Amino acid sequence: MGAFDMLRIAGSSLGMHQTWLDALAHNISNVNTVTSTDEDAFQAQMVVARTRPDGGVRVGGIEYGDAEGRMVHSPDHPLADENGYVRMPDIDMSSQMSQLVMAQRGFQASVQVTKNAQDSYNAALQIGRS
Figure 1 (cartoon, rainbow, N blue to C red):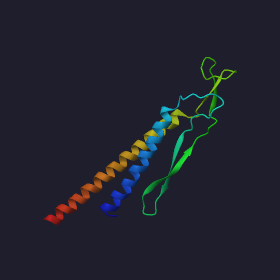
Figure 2: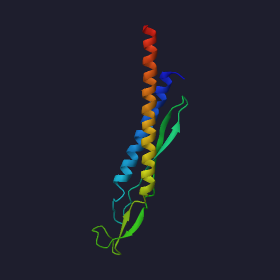
Figure 3: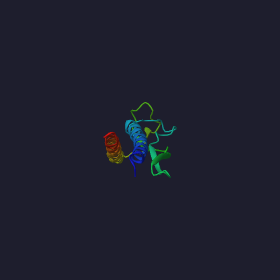
Figure 4: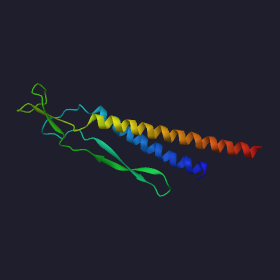
């Protein structure tokens, strides 16, 4: 595998991991979003990764969590229904944080592969100049 192949594959991984990080940030920032019971809850975004025929990875799509969410008894909330309930997203914060760590590490690994490929390419150019 040449330096250009490594750069191409690492670049595709950077893009996929960035999308995953963006989706996780969106989910985490909306974990406490409240809606009335007659509206859909915030739906968590889940990135679907797919392999590419050339060895890279791509975002295959975005899937969404359950719009039903979970009902929370909060009679003092301005959006509460006549029974005192509001709708909250069904997002598990510990799962989101675990995925965040995995996405960050994947992104960092792709950055390191990119640096290594660039170093290899630069070394080959130096050999060619000698």
